Length: 627
Ligand code: COA
Ligand code: AMP
Image (spheres, helix red, strand yellow):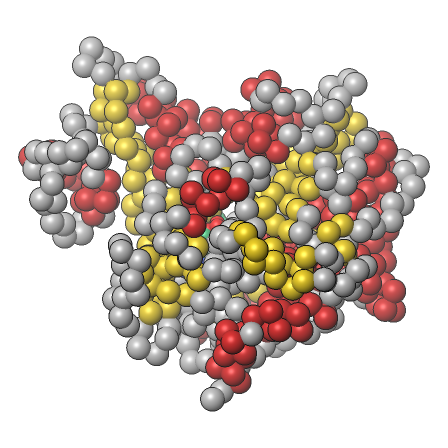
């Protein structure tokens, strides 16, 4: 038995012993009384009775251990032409001061703080300051518009919102203050105060009595010590797309999260303290939470916060420049970023200019890694390219090649085998295991390991209904796939209406809600269609009201603008077509899957339950003409 198999077996046989041992890597203010509370299935809690502080483990403990002068965070911003390195001591001091500022604004343990920020160090500082106080942060991705921000504000009910005056996209400056004001005008909940980082590119006009600048907030603020919290207390809530326009608040606890992330940094990513780790993502996504901020710092790594894109800031060599300049050992990004680089620089001409000798591995996640992209990256970089599968909900990889344990052979198209601690099953509709090679629902046997979501914010019932009821005793990932004869997992598609656009998780249901609100639209459907760069892009199909005599082009332009306005530019909703009717089953269910196949030019069967097969020909004609 290889080392990997041995560790999997140990984690399967004695999960509590396994995670109790991993928990020794964390400094506890009070040790756990119980490793796993199994008294209320299907809800489980890890490290009950323990007290800790996540910020202490990410920063203070490294300073106390004599690593205060080691670099903790490197900010590299090609869009502002800025670079800055914070040592562990400097970052600890900045975080303690901002925690003091938040405390002066009335934030105490358990309060929520919404963070709506671009990729600047203050975003990470604000997150860690909340952790220091035991306050619960909820970061909202900057590419979401006011309506999405408002929905999150109403659910999390923050005491304070931390934002910046603007974000900087390659082709435009995104002013955040008008978005914040629009969100607050929409939301029923009002925060007491807003803290705004003023950026030179576009300073914001403050709302008197409500807004304070970051500089004013920290002026004279006393550094705040780390507040002990229960391992089971929430560290953050991160909203993610569900099947409706109502996002789900994924809860992360403090104890399980710290244990799992530190373990994953060493065992999945193979990182030793002191090495440089770069997750080229955004703090608004789970990858940013786990692997820009918490994971690397908990493990004593230097983390890189990059405010730029894979291409265009200034060119497709940007990633290779950052790796060379900062001695990055491991990069984590989405396959779409690699596809974007390949499109501009297919022969890797720009890579040759940089010394990548310290670079060890590239990890890809967020969407399926197509073998072609993976093999291209491997040939260009000459290092292992590791696909890993996980979700906002799980917080860290479910399936990955664990470089820190034992590198297994890579099979392009598969993220390899389940990581120790996760038990992955492929189930048919009746909840029975399918055999090797047979596709079904990917489900995870309960209890889930530490670090995965214990519940949804404010609703155990919604958590159970959304994830735990389809297959009793299992968490339903809503991904479909199969396990091959070698035990390798293949993740093929979602079983719900979530699509992945450039590695960003979006709900077609939420887009349909926006389209349906247009006065001329009687009925609509949004489907994800294959795209060579972004993996998938949304396509809207509109059925207009019978009395509508308006120009179709105008209506299409209006709904495109409406989605951008309501959900945000990140939805990349740029295509819609008008059709006479939508194909439906006799019970009235819209046949989205069949339309997707038609749109992608794939073979399709006419479903036996279809109400009128002629509709499929109409759709094919419209999509053929429109594409
Ligand atoms: N704030 C404001 N707007 C944002 C934003 C942010 N943080 N992030 C993206 N947007 C906007 C973009 O400016 C763009 O607007 P536009 O319609 O005016 O051009 C729109 O949202 C779509 O952005 P994106 O999907 O990023 O497409 P793109 O064509 O600008 O860039 C890539 C394509 C591949 C370069 C880019 O998607 C990328 O870097 N992807 C990596 C994905 C990633 O890191 N995923 C995280 C999960 S690991
Ligand atoms: P998110 O919650 O934004 O991380 O998105 C999670 C979803 O992205 C998963 O449920 C999958 O559908 C998809 N996904 C993430 N990583 C992979 C991967 N390595 N292979 C296939 N799909 C992936």
